[in-house]
Image (tube, rainbow, N blue to C red):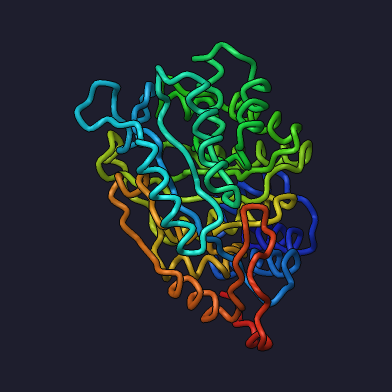
Length: 372
């Protein structure tokens, strides 16, 4: 009976009908056939993206500070204000990092940091203006919703005013960091001094209402239940119904090394692929799913293209937060492109808005490989 119920849900998703939370949970909890789940997710991906290519982008993670007033048990990156290795990036170092990114073909930086308790809003505005004056072609994908909510508390300003000022200073798009699991019970268990679920969503809502776009994320396989994962996806889907502002969804497994949650066993590829596939089936209104090769490695990251992903994510010239927790996967541009080709697609470079920014390939695409 369970197998028949699962098959009905998979068929429903493939046909383009919306899954209920109960059906999403059924897939996570009861679908033991990873191949069937992958085939369904791949069918949905091909319906949404029938083009013969899969995409990637070139950007760099720049963490402008590691100083953070919040306490996240899952984070190995943050430092307190007076720690010996605490830092706020020097402008010349920032410019050097962006120059290197541009030289490699990058058109974007991912600018995020900890919750610094003392920097004024004018510091962030000047930072954005300085970057845009020197690198007008570079999109600043910056300041997670969790950071924005921190700004509202420190500066005692409404969310919209903070967002408007940052947008006018040069903020181009909003990354989905700080979401973890959008269930308050889970958030209270793993973090202190950070926004709750509705606050994270409200920042995204107001950014979207201002015409802004951004990504949504989920870090899973720690203390949450399977039902919590579905609740997270439901929150994202509801807001997307309202605003349409999310360009993509990215999920990854918790990396426990060097954190206060290091006792939690690290989830493997099966859990990652299963959860991503369910996300593709559930998030019928989010157009793109990114592979998380940064946490999963090249082979699983490539396999994710058959489990709901239509994008290999970023070359990610630099990454500090996840790597602080022990994950050290690095790929070259050629490896990313080859992974897409080996999966049977043409590699195409895009920007954060999923607009293609490379020259179209001269040769026709190879036959698309069979799914999982």
